[in-house]
Image 1 (spheres, rainbow, N blue to C red):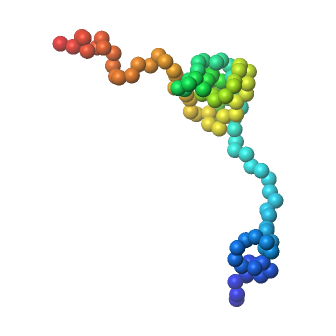
Image 2 (image 1 turned 60 degrees about the vertical axis):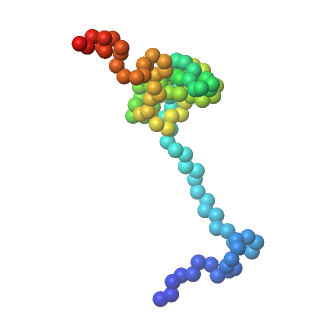
Image 3 (image 1 turned 90 degrees about the horizontal axis):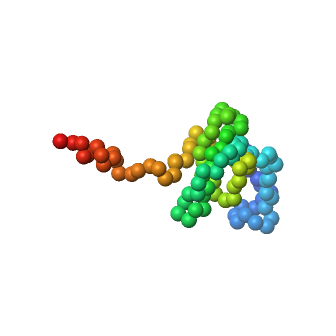
Amino acid sequence: MAAPKKSEAAPQGNPGKGQQEERIEGEIKFTDATPAEVKEIVSRAGTRGELTQVMCQILDGRDKNKAIRRNVKGPIQIGDVLMLLDTELEAQKLGGARRGGSSSSSSATRK
């Protein structure tokens, strides 16, 4: 038995004039996103303040009613709804954290 041929009507070579194009009609698929409402604007972030850190409450899905901190780029205000692709990641808190290990008072108590 011979293998079925793809298309004998269209000439081989550079695709362009004279060739028929097969177009597949289908539906548009979007990635699944979870809505979250902005409840509080925490602070500005980024080297130039281009990010805004917000607290938002997840409205639907597995983590419904969970409050998480996220960084948002662009204009944002309380009451806006964000569409989050991932609800497990949370932005780090800004400020407050000291870098460089333990506090200096613990080294003073050593003998």
